[in-house]
Length: 150
Image 1 (cartoon, rainbow, N blue to C red):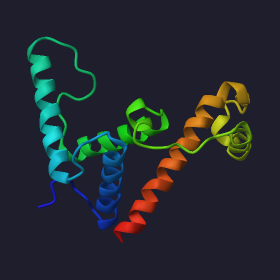
Image 2: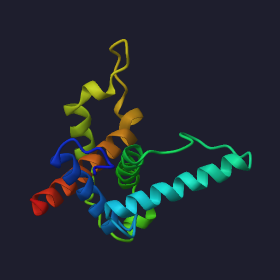
Image 3: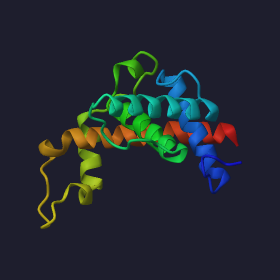
């Protein structure tokens, strides 16, 4: 039975690649789908107890497995782009210089345009550009793992 609702083998392989990379980065100890289900159950129990105690719970009251997997995969990507300390202890980031930042900004100007067509200035967008480049590096790492898995 497919509890994670993968519709294609490629979706499953992508998830497994992300989980493998998250383990390498030190974000999780176990990259198996069974461990995802266990973490989902733990998170749901934590939320249930918090609600029972009248505490505020942000987001869903309870996760389904597919939603929790998506939550984890998104969190891994954001943690990588934000250069969390735990990741810095397990991974050497490629340096990003000002030239790369400006080139990305120039080549992706549509990402930095307001509703009325006015552009955000580079200095206003520098942090976003930096994180977008990190997200591309994350994608490159995932693609490398996918090539190894196939």
